[in-house]
Amino acid sequence: MQRILARTQSIQMLLTGVWLALVLTLTGCGETDSERMVQQAVAIESADECHLCGMLITNFVGPKGELTQQGARQVKKFCSTRDLFAYALDPEHRASIESIWVHNMARVPWEFPDDEQFINARDAWFVINSRLKGAMGPALASFAEESDARAFIGINGGELIRFDQVTMDTLNSMGSPMMPAHRGQALPAIDGAPSAKKQPDAQAITASQ
Image (cartoon, rainbow, N blue to C red; front, top):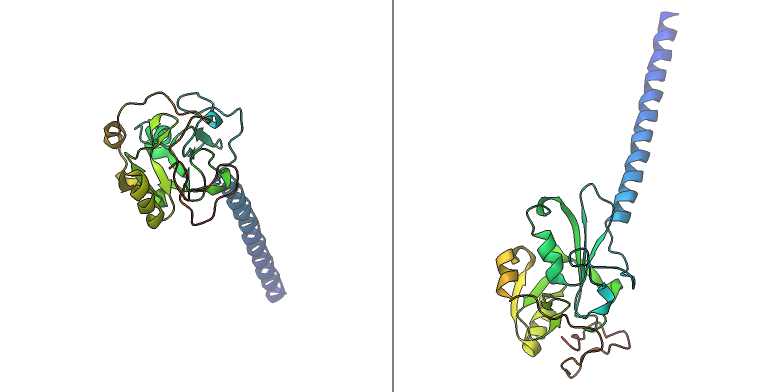
């Protein structure tokens, strides 16, 4: 009798352990799916305003940015990579930044960045001090590949840096924000650049870059 009772208790303990493991697994999957939904760049709508300066994002040319912060599900959107970094580098925000994205400007025209071409900013290559301007004047042109960034520099000038090299001093060295570059303004014509009216070739370097 005692042997049967001990075996029954062992079976109960085993089933309890299996049940707990299953609950924890399902809970973990749920959290992962939820976090994955948050950790994705989202489309920039026509009414979206820059989280830093308040301007309508889609009114301006050049690469844009987005980020998420710890404890907040909102994806913050920015009218330029310069504003994105100005916010992310602020000591008040820096430690809480989770995901951060920028446009891959090798795949989109300077005047109309495509929201399907966001890339992880931490892996990106950036060009500063080029002749092209963004929403706040001087822009950090962003690329997924070093070769595309160097091709951009060959056409538009500038200096190549990585994500962890961007500091407040970098932003300040680019000069003060100036009159924003609106869509529809004349941009420097570049041979072989992707058209703003059609999806650019994957290897093309942006037109008004």
